[in-house]
Amino acid sequence: MSTIKWYNNIEEAIKKAKETHKNILVFITAPACGYCYKMKEEIFDNKETAEILKKEYILVKMDISKAAKIFPGTYVTPTIYIFTPNKELLASQIGYQNEEFFFWTLGDADRKLQELRGEK
Image (cartoon, rainbow, N blue to C red; front, side, top):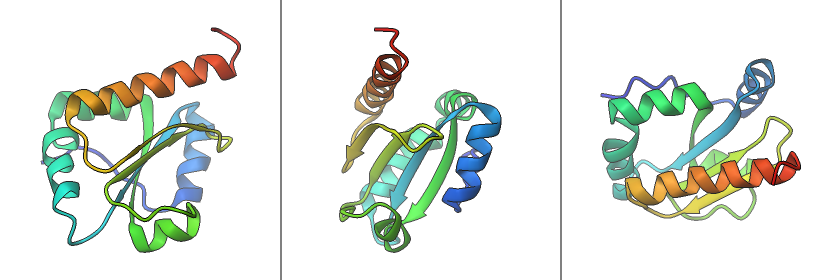
């Protein structure tokens, strides 16, 4: 069972991200998406992974029907978007990926953030 508190309102998540100086991770799902459930079980329900994510990100879970209006061009589930509180896209992951690739995507977001800050 996941210990993650998911936001479902992107504007509330952005406000919280600005207050806490955290980036935002959006997990886009669909009710009949088997791979979404698989990612939830393998990644988000993992206690250690959940703790890392809660510490580093504001987490948003969104149904594809709502997400397509906010993120035009989103047609595949699961999809992950990682962006700054100022809405700068840091990384994305389209389709199912295992935990190793998921953490690679988080690393890619960190590298992009360093570039944006001029640290790299």
